[in-house]
Image 1: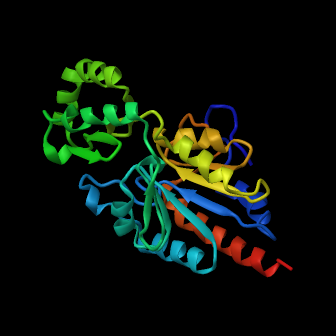
Image 2: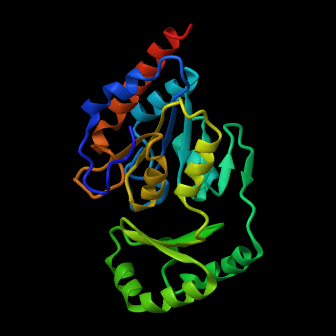
Image 3: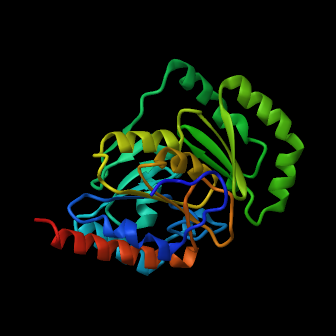
Length: 266
């Protein structure tokens, strides 16, 4: 099940039975975003944790031998402590790759990319420190429940855009914030690397909720199921939309299909 033409996803959770039925004799891979997908948004980012039922089901999927990758804009170590499930984590939109045991490798950067990163420490210096998320290959400004931060950003937006463009950084707006990052560090590029290491016959699914996930949905087209997690209809490259409260039920069905598929393997 691939992505449909860009538009409103026309399928829902009840339409995934055929996808789950394909688990017999193969190695399905579940890839998911974190914030807004597995964990609800919070103004204080360190309070954004998954529901206990979500964590329990993810843990059972991993314990059953299922393959699960967390692909997030957060740093991998931070995401690991919040998730609370031993999993492979691709942090900073895939620039970091952290094993369940904690070993982390990163994607090499070019000299031009290293120079571009020199701008990041100063880019949001004028904003309140608690509104800024500084990461190794990007910097994000958050204004969830912070109208003062949004107003301040709008006043100097053009200046920031010009500085970022001159340095080789790109702007990525997201729900309640904006991020400036290296163009090579996207979830789409990460998904390409994930798919390159897998058999074409193995089902792959990606769960995401925001504009940062659209790159991954587009890359996944024809290779699996792109699932938008959203309370409201939205234009997306994903072919399926489920509600945030349906995520535990989706994981429950994934676990059931995984277990049944293992029993059906010769």
